[in-house]
Image 1 (cartoon, helix red, strand yellow):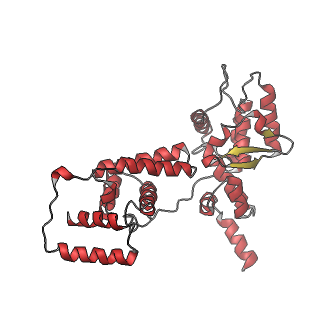
Image 2 (spheres, helix red, strand yellow):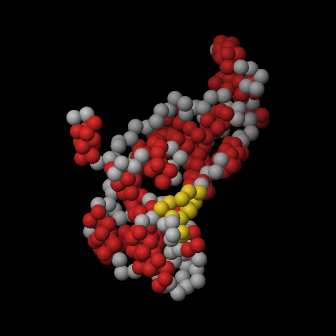
Image 3 (cartoon, helix red, strand yellow):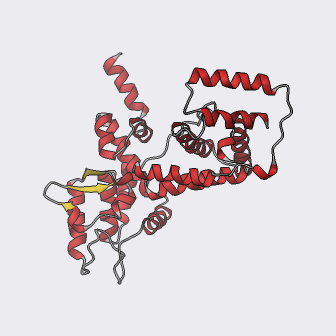
Length: 328
């Protein structure tokens, strides 16, 4: 109770005192209150404004350009914390968060990556509360990044790509494989494309990535031929670049493409066939062939270069050749 009282007083004085004065105030209150027993008056309880603060945070993130999917993930994660702890967010301390993350991991058998994602979201939320002067100090400051194993994620081999192409009985499927493999675009970006978005002369198209950020991607000559063949074979008037195979022809959805690729993988006995794997394959191939990481970052539409490096798994044979070239 004493700690909550000190915190509440300091929050009230935050606009009027600097950091050094706040520290002195805290020390003085701790010294004085040590001699007293502090109890709360039930009929004068503090109003819990946690939900209001969470809504304000989500609104701030929306203005920053976060997608609806990201905003929903943020809100769900923070709501789960508040519901579990049953405390006003202003009174949540570091130990509360450590206990919550530990229990969450144990209860759900979550991976370290999942736990670090939760920690990262909570850090963003409490840092925002601190910046907006709703709290004095973020309780996540002392909770460091969770160490995760560096797993080398799989990519498609040239042989696997050709097997998938050869197995396609529908021109649409062949065009989708080529589009993903040559551009490195996200599946969510591809399903939003329209026919008019494609510039066959320059072999490029404009896509809208995360946060509605616009960028140009490029495709190769093979993709151009297969895409033109697919579009010429269509009899519908749907403006979407890729549509369902049967009438009424509608724009394809991410789930439908993922399911079709999974079934293709099972049929061909290729491990983990998924649209995102084409993106990772292109990134790895580009790095192996010497594309500067800054250019690859722009091509993939990454805000931070660290994200690009996670996609690009450099082959050990290339490291050996580079050592011989530059050092040996």
